[in-house]
Amino acid sequence: MHELHAIQLEPVITRALEEDWGYGDWTTDLCVPSGKQSNAKIITREDIILSGLDVARAVFRRVDSTLEVVSAHKNGSSLKAGDVILEVSGNARSILKSERVALNFLGRMCGIATATKGFVDQLSGTRCQLLDTRKTTPGLRLIEKTATVTGGARNHRVGLCDGVIVKENHIRAAGGIKAAVSRLLEALPPTLKIEVEVSNLNEVQEALDAGADIIMLDNMSLSEMAMAVRTVQGRAKLEASGGVKIDTVRKIAETGVDFISTGSTIHSSRWSDLSMLFDV
Image (cartoon, rainbow, N blue to C red; front, side, top):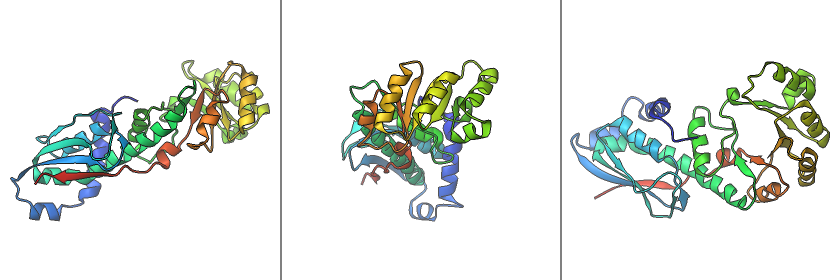
């Protein structure tokens, strides 16, 4: 995914600000003079891959269009503990009312990008590519999937309309792999690829014979994945999925699969430790 447009960001940011503000910020409005001008900076307290800079900037500007936000970095930059992510200047009340929401988005996105980069680094030297999944926080999918791309992964489908994945329950409900794929081939727009999830080598052959473009190897052993690669011989793309961890992803890639998908870079990533500090 590319950097998000203001049209995509505005509803997400507005909901977050409404949630944080409630019916008013007592602390800021009573403690800080209305005309007070200030400068503040957001720093990282640990090594990170920067993601969400555009989102944080949009938060500040949504609260107060007169705030000036500058950064010497770009999304995807590698930052060290103590580095300044961005600086913001203008009305102190506006900066304070933006602080938590901006930090929440930044911390979440940097955490995802940093975790993703760790997985991608493990694939160095192989031809395998890392994919994300739809296991995202409801309402934050675009933001979280943007962060995985910043970390070096590629997006799997963003929603159900982006592609076709025939999973175990689809297969059962449709009456088998062949029946499911046949119906799709009859009615599906020709620009969409068909992916079929399989759990054993017999199903690999069945999906291949049915005309699948991509075959997802679900929770297969390394030896089974390697056999699937030899069976398919490039006639379909192979995606490994299920139980992928940072210490296993390299071995999975070395079986020869084309893609590895994991939701852990999103649902199990740790937020990055960031802080905003006002200049004295």
